[in-house]
Image (cartoon, rainbow, N blue to C red; front, side, top):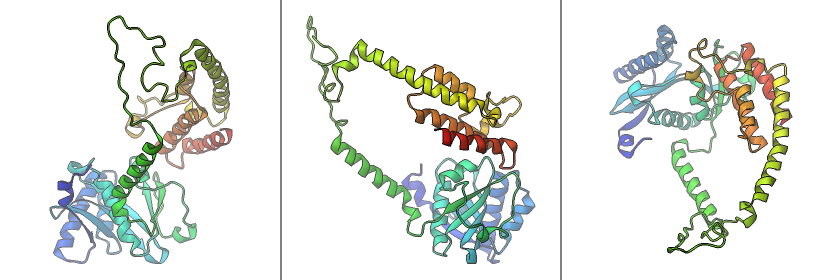
Length: 338
């Protein structure tokens, strides 16, 4: 999070190669940041695009000096812009600057009639762009962008719609206001905020119905049946019924001919960077173990794990790989099955 003191040191500037000393210094600094933070990108390519007069860069300045930026090329007639590079210098990361930078860029380009962003994201950047509102599903008509941007092997094409009426620089304040409103409405119909006095027990005093006499239990909607053995037996019967349904779903997914990449955990001794990209791995064997451990309480919980398994595969593997294609096939089946 960015505190008020840090925010006071920040400013933004759109820079391009106009031969002015200030902008040239800023572009060189941004070029160095991009090259440092994007080591797989050829340095000559970074220089060519950053210094190209058709490209612009929104620089995030701290104390007047660039600490990050986004290099982009607008296609005014097509009403979209392609993001080429986006990076924050290493010492200023994990402070929310990346989100602040993207929000200011959206606010800037919407004044110019830009309605969409396109970018090719590698596996390490997909998570960031998703948080900024980008999606792998493209809604912009192909004729608006095909032939204008270059296709990159190993990258995932993502799109973001820039809404003309949203004030992107006020997004944090808007979300804060919305949360406060929702909490106030919940409080109006909920007893969650009510604090009950504890039990006052003296020496030798015993309760007739210990659970029910605890202040707040009955007010919270609990009944005596919730604490009886009969309730527990009923719960076991309900679980047995659910388990049968869940196991049938798991078996159908496990037998699907596109499920072969998901049968066992990824061997991280062979795929050494897997856990760097995928923070929460899961596979069909782990889902089966969770079934046996009575982890799943609803179909939605089971579906969430299946979808996460499929999305992990699509995140790590490029769109042209067989793994990505099998993940899409299995994902379509899961959506139909559930």
